[in-house]
Length: 173
DNA sequence: TCAGTGATTAGG
DNA sequence: CTAATCACTGAG
Image (tube, rainbow, N blue to C red; front, side, top):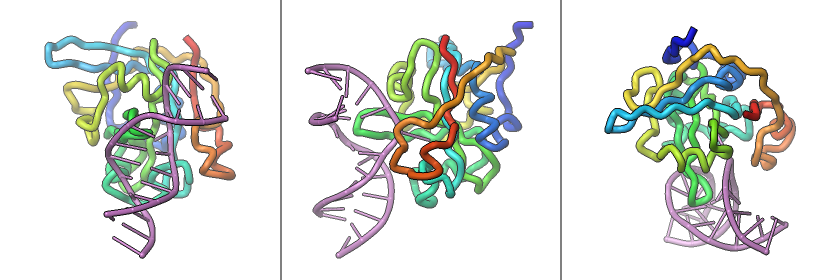
């Protein structure tokens, strides 16, 4: 039972509160130009859910940066923060329902800024489609580990009740 | 605890 | 145009 299957549209076009925890234990696959494929188990995610969620970038409305979040689930939302770090997110939910799952950790690299630097994520991945891209996708290997939940990191500015929502999901390998 | 660092955004 | 903000990290 080792068949790894690429996640399809159905997986991502669900509420981010299902998509984010379901990503834990899945495998992030990247194919470079020399055909080398690198795989990393996803170990930590956070859910950002719609315009009401003050921690979600879409709470400020649709802008050039957040546009992709309004598309259907399965796209990649990448943005730059603190002058140094690219953040990798997978868009979730239906069209015009802006949600995204932040990839906070992968096997071997904890921290959203460190992992994108390690695997080479940048602006060129903005809008990429995980269900059809030749260079990045997610596989289900049948690994469904128990995971923990907790409040999201770095979003205290969002205030109540958003800053305390237990929308961070993680395992320790 | 705190500074580095620059894209993004709102506002004039 | 200006200024504030920021889903982070590493050093102390």
